[in-house]
Amino acid sequence: MQAERSNSQNARARFEQSVTFQPVFAFDNQLVNLSYCNRRKQERQYKQLSDWERAAQAVENIRKEETTVVESQTEEDDDNENQNKHEQERLQQELDRRAKEAELQRLRKPREEAEKQRRKE
Image 1 (cartoon, rainbow, N blue to C red):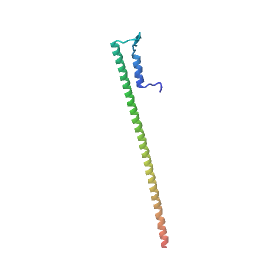
Image 2: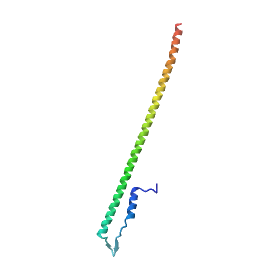
Image 3: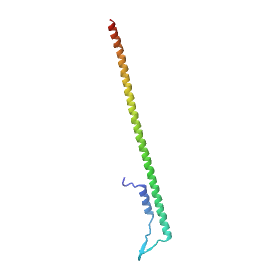
Image 4: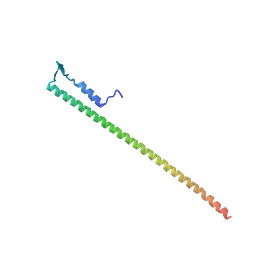
């Protein structure tokens, strides 16, 4: 992961590779200013760098949002699956309970009838 740089770092690296800035020299406490054209060129380069960085940051933000949305959807899907699984288990237990009750009732009937016949005799 360390080898992989973010988009903003890549933008800055491209900018630094493509641009060489002319320094401002000081002679006898007086600054020798860059020419107007060089300053304009430098301003454009800085603006281009900031545009690249903003675009890279926007891309990173979009990726983070997409990742967050996907993760939250995955969590919701997992929660829904767990709820469905628990509901299915509960329904299966209820069906088993009813089947046992029906079986017991079916077995009880002949016993009760046999007891009634014994009482009559």
